[in-house]
Amino acid sequence: METILLTGAGGYVGSNAAEYFVRFGYRVIGTVHRNVADRLKTSGAEIRTCDITEASEVAALFDGPVDFVVHVAARASDVGRDAWFREANYEAVKRLAMVAMEKGVRRFVYLSTADVYGLHDFHGEGEDALRFDETVKKPYRIEYKIMSEQWLAEHLPAERFSCVRPCVIYGRGDTSITPRTVAYLKSSPYAFHFGRWKGGNRWPLAHVENVCRALHAAMVLPEAGGKGVTVLDSRRVTVSDYYRELAAEFLPGKRLKERTLPMAVIRPVAALSTLLSRSKPLFDPTLYALDTIAHNLDFSNRRFLDWLARMGLEEYRHDTYR
Image 1 (cartoon, rainbow, N blue to C red):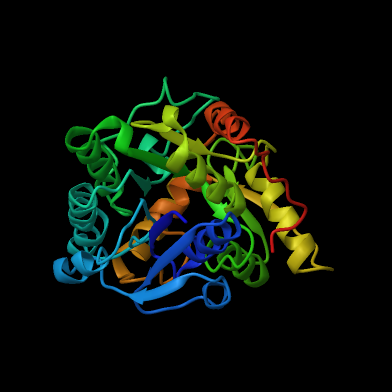
Image 2 (tube, rainbow, N blue to C red):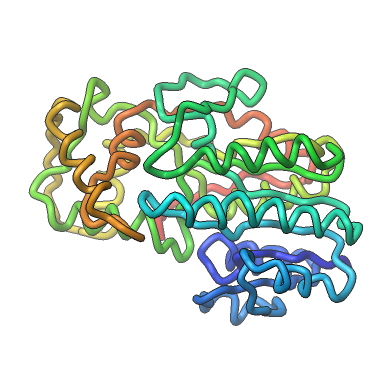
């Protein structure tokens, strides 16, 4: 039985990935830090406590044979201190990858983000046409995701690593974007849009099951070596669609009213939100949240679909946000 070391298994994406890989017959060693999702406890994965920023704890994870590393653990927030992001989202990646190579791991799969392409308008570009946007800095510290991908490409053989870049992840146990948006819709008299798109821009959804399938493909396909793949559901959903669908599912009976405001009106508020927030947003929108909902994040998912086909898998289609 092949063994996967899965970091961040106690979180939302990680616990779904643990369940997925166990279902496919892998032995999964899942690392947790503070929180352990209920899904992980019943997944069949072996659970180990580890702080991936501690070198000695990382080394101890390889006390037995490990065939693959799927690195999901990261600090994911709109806000926070730069040092926190650098250590968790860059230094820890290098440390883990180096140990994995020394221990003969066949492939290191890194969960990155589609945000490495930047937060501006896109119109169906694929990975071959997209480039890292190194002008993107705060507030999300996307540069450390970019730096990690670049470091892997420079220091690891191409056949021994791959990167998965999901868009907005949702579905089964989402503890982040869905409840945050539902809370906003519940408390606000209007669903506000900002800027020229007026809610008609694409909201780039990636169901967590599709993210798991992409991680699997990135782990085993020969052609995935040294490549990155954008994970995006084929169904095109606009920001306005997203708000209306969430309201219908989670707030039945609420009459959703929509309004559009200029970016200049809300940007100072978003800047204040980012400035006052520490480890999580104090109120919405932060600067990062504002830029995501105000741009057309419309990528091609052709490579993702191709990798699934090569695996004998199909895209997961949903009819719920739960």
